[in-house]
Image (tube, rainbow, N blue to C red; front, side, top):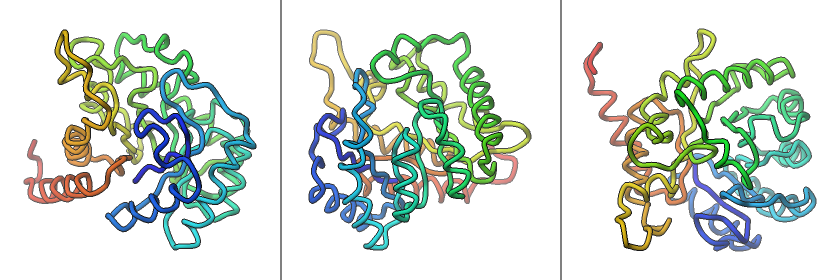
Length: 279
């Protein structure tokens, strides 16, 4: 899944694809590089981000989604709003990626259920402006699992087909970016993907979004030096992609496709070569 942020304030690209022309061109480039899905979002969810009005979010994504669908791309809409998802469903998107898991807009699950689209339900504890204050866990894998189980029950009750649900552990969202130790929430979740996904007797497909996030930089930051830039995390992102794919992830959400597509193929070959019952 290749990312197209139609925002002026994305943490990962600083607004490089803000504007319809640049975003459409980027989406087509990602498809040409091997992305299976293009994820288009018009609202930044970077740490500290403030919300924008729905009409501004729609203004940003409408021309981009329209042109990418017209070009034959498989498009996902990255939104927390049912109003935006409803327009995108009518425009021909193939998936709704809701980082709030239906918590930000109570009408979203019902809308997705009626549309019959696959629905990414992410683990979420609150909006970006204060999400770091919510990164408190005794056992992050167990608690994320249990909170996702609650969201699954809630969205199914609103009409979402359980076979259409994809889970996202929400790396970087209300998770401590520590590289090591008991608060290394993102790393613990990556290591526990299978446990997170096994809910109610079903193994749900998992989307992993680790690309360029701060917990990758923390592995390499040294005291007294400037933190590594987000763009400097692309090689580490590809390594995480390989680990996630080898661990059974359904999809990875990334900003740069070629190295990550290679990583997925490496992981697929590795999984195919493992002996039954092997580690």
